[in-house]
Image 1 (cartoon, helix red, strand yellow):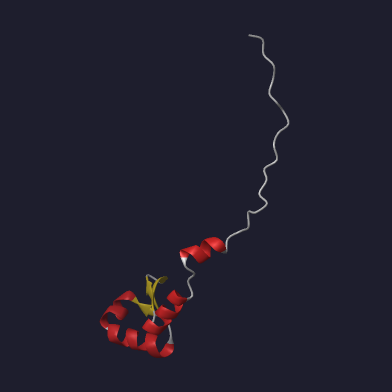
Image 2 (image 1 turned 60 degrees about the horizontal axis):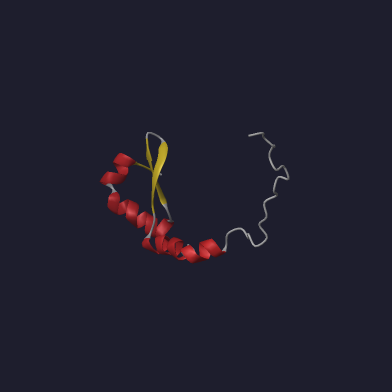
Length: 79
């Protein structure tokens, strides 16, 4: 893990470690704020994302979607 200030001064090292050792986490005030990835890991993440069409087609099935109807017809009123 890298603190923001250290990551700023050693950016080349952060990038190299992301390439050789894996994702590098950057913290600010002890809270994880960012991750530096190698370009290969980034592209691998992008390639695993389904297209919008695939996302929609993989959603829940609604072929037999029925809504129960209330049998109450309201009330009679005198006009």
